[in-house]
Length: 326
Image (cartoon, rainbow, N blue to C red; front, side, top):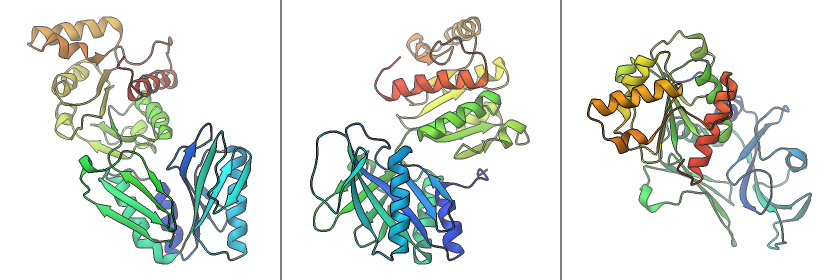
């Protein structure tokens, strides 16, 4: 089941299909303390709508106004802009300054770019390993089925007489949220903001909280005791178990515990966590394997509401993603 929502790439595609130009700004390089990480984007329609962000605040507002002015002046795109703190360094500048600064690439997209934008949208939606290459001539190259062992994990901006920006899709961690309830919905909202690829698994396609989930990249429908068959994990993936009942939590945990993933967390009280862990040991699971399960889930902040639990779980995932095992 594909999530019925308007993604960033859908936003662009719909306007290109209607023969409306779209302006795109990409953060190509970031140094020091600057808003918006490398690879973030914002798209602007000529009618005044926008989608995405490059960090917000004054920098984003300045650049939105600047690209619209360039469009009105019929400037030649793409354009490279270097921006330092609160002021622009220079257009097409090779100079650097100390402190925070960023390189932005500005593109004008029209109907001729529709096929490439739709291809990018499909690759992003299906978490397909791909390279997206944006170059100074305004062309967009999409290379699919790339060898993960031979590619970089972060976007790369290559300067020179003809600059090029390359980003990788499909190797970022996927987060598998098993359960489609209120906490799953709140957690999806938080993790989507952080840029993770989200898959939500539920056995009730009509669940109101599942239907309200406009944040997940994919929604998978199936019985909880078969969910593990739908997961195609990598060593960097995260599994979060939060089904409606402790029995189904335990069944899911038994089925996913041996999967080669970076993190397994289960929402449960301390007492329930201890009881489930003990039953796993008695059924033959190795103690070291059981100890890798994060349960109770999240960083202890005395959370009670779905939103508070979501923040604590997201904080734990960020901490592990950034290099702290616990």
